[in-house]
Length: 172
Image (cartoon, rainbow, N blue to C red; front, side, top):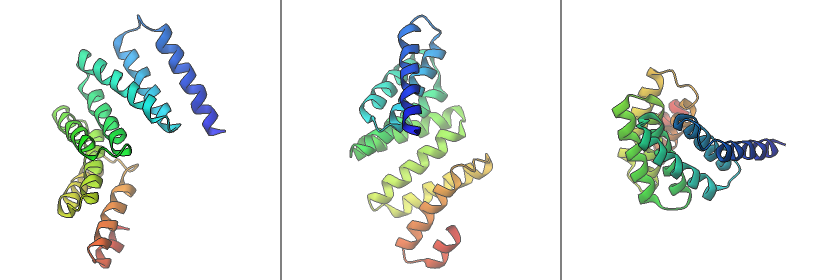
């Protein structure tokens, strides 16, 4: 049932894109990113990436740096899912840089979290911990409770890998 709602959402967003060619760029940007998200929820990674790429171009054209940071992060997730770790890291680092520049905490935290995951997979444990701790600080400072469990699980998992069960339990 939930899947059907995403399908319907995609149809409406696609219709809005087709009919809204003359709509303000900011509105088209919201529809493109919404379409990318809905497609991703349906596991249509290629279409989602395509929508994110269009959204990135538009965000850069209109100078919406906050949207650019989030879109870059989304493109990093796509690269990661397709096994292109170097591209994923590059996108997450771009997202992090833009987000810090504009002072937007959500993409800062998401980028740090995603970079940490990439680094952990590559055996760069100390860097992963550092990124997660920074993400944790920013998330707590900005009361971003929605991501705290994921950050804490990441820190707990790494602590377990490092053979520190006391610290792992504290994070878990």
